[in-house]
Length: 70
Image 1: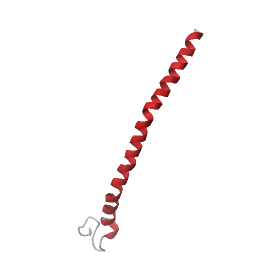
Image 2: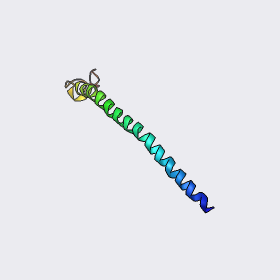
Image 3: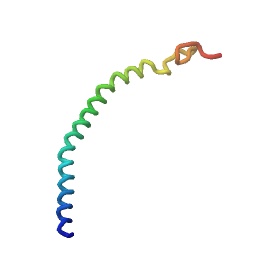
Image 4: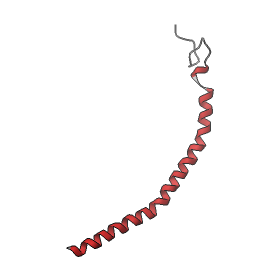
């Protein structure tokens, strides 16, 4: 039985090394694309939030644009 332990251990280490070798570029690509997507969506949402801020509503109006409830 002890002869099989070395083969099992070598197979396990080889499998983990191969998985890391193949999945590392995929992980790096996805992280790079995530940063590009965040940079692309950051500016439009920031400008929309600043234009439609509820703090900018006139004194007699609710943030929804209608009259204040009485």
